[in-house]
Structures are given as structure tokens and as C-alpha cells.
Length: 96
Image (tube, rainbow, N blue to C red; front, side, top):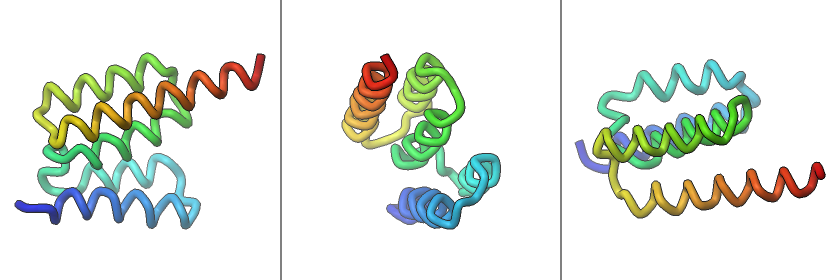
């Protein structure tokens, strides 16, 4: 499977998010994508959902799981993790 799975993951996530779908529905749609775990965007979409409901430690663990699962490109995962950490740090400093 080429870029189709990666594009599908991102498209599902973006469409459902912009329609205001509940996170559970978005997560279920992502998990239904065949071989979605091979693509960085699949994990990045899941991480965005987890950021809304879970602790930062869980988000970091999800990125670790993505790397161990062989998701590519790894650089995209790395960049998304840094962005998530920055968002979390900014949110913490804004609430202090």
C-alpha cells in the first residue's frame, strides 16, 4: 500500500475533527484503516486525540509505540512529538 493509507488516516481525522465528531468516533475510524499503523500520520492523528483527553506521558508512550511498530517516516513522528511537548509546555505555563 503506497501513500493511500497515510492519506486515508489524515483525511479521516481531519474530516471528523472539523465536523465536531466525538474523539471515540474519530479513533474508531482511524483504527478501521487497513495497515494504518505503518504510517506516521495515523499515529500523529491518534496522538492529537490523546492530547485532548490523556496525560502527556500517555502521548509520549504512544509515539514510542509508533516507532516500535515501524511507522514511517520517523522524522515526521519526531517533529510531531516535539510539537506536542511544546503545546503541553505552553498550556502549562499559560495556566500557571
